[in-house]
Length: 590
Image (cartoon, rainbow, N blue to C red; front, side, top):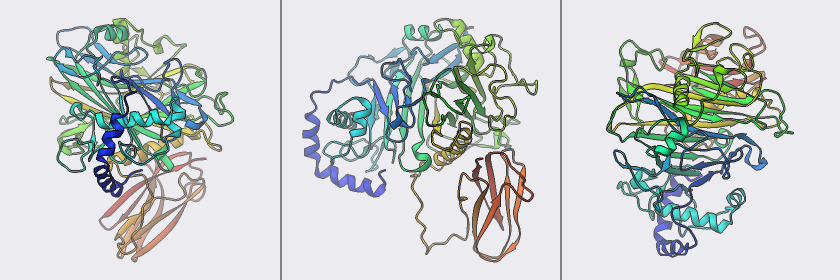
């Protein structure tokens, strides 16, 4: 993975090889402009496919699962996925649903003016993929994996990388690292894509093709421009098990979008398609699929994994006095929301996951909305709100008997709460997480960030432990994004600069049954170190006394003392010393 030092080196290297870059680029006359429309994201442990019409995780033939994990095994865990939205247009009684599921409700290209899209057959209307170490005139790079995975030669793979580097569509919204800080993309100096990402994919699409939107769920276009950026990291640990999807939605119509919901839909097939379950974690804004049993014929001899979609950054909306829509205990009018540029703004919030739904054969309330008809749009919009599609009534939790917007919100590991299998037996599942409602006036834009995460498929981690690991990964991924994209590499400690107070990450993590917690205080202080569960309930007090300056280590034993046999799951440990307070997460995996 390229760091800042490499970036500086790249500036000099690209300057010195400018003429070579031009010669190399001019030599790619075998490439057909206007293509490709698909690209692979495949440098960490996941290999999957994106198309510039919004569909993803399906193979190039669009006949089989395309999400391979672990990629070298060729085993697959997701059949297809896509982003959807539901909108009410003033004066139109028919709700409109757009985006992509099995049919493609989008076409490639941007919107030039209200109701007018650029020609989807234009040469530049395609999908783009870059990696920071493959550029015109650059050094040789081993591209054997991409060639094998994509059915191409290494020369073809490199030629496409170089072409995409040169033609990177910054003018249409594609991101880049502005090395010379002049705001203008120069392929000789600047680096296309997300900073420090191993691969970045970008494309723009729109919903102005009436035939496509009618074929999707029987409604007309609304005028959304859809810019998608997908990127991943490589390294060790969790960095190999996820990637980000950033969707910028722009209202390029002349009308208001009222009561809008955005939904990440997917058809996870964990190996075989007929033995799956689904679930969600409301606190983590996470929806996931997993295998109903400890083995799957396709994944054998490996245990089946779990795959999830986490809402990392929801819609940015004004906070209303007296409400707490993001459920963080702070009045929304006094809260802070985070913009696309990572700026905190008072009086705004980012919406979390507000509903989770699933489709399963065997219950008419859980059937897939029919495609090509407005009845499908009505049903899908109901699901996005956390309601049964056919009836429009809120989900009913069969355990509590209470209405909820979150189906399957129990814990499959402990078999507590509403878990899959209570209503419908194992089988093929589709699932979706939604966020809303919000409004978009003409010219408004919203940026939604989703992380797609895989966990498990390794010896010793069964199908339920994979869920616990997935949830743990989701917390790390959220922290990673919130800290503005640091690089997933081990920290190098400078022994000269010792922090006055510091709480270290527990080790080992995940753990069973014991783990070590280390902390440092720079002066004599009264110290408390406590452990909490996901609901904020205190589990254990490990330290509660005055301590002199120094570094201390405490062993947390989940099977002894006041703790006594904690269930698997995510826990928090919090250090308080004087005015210092820090909390970290750990996972108990039995």
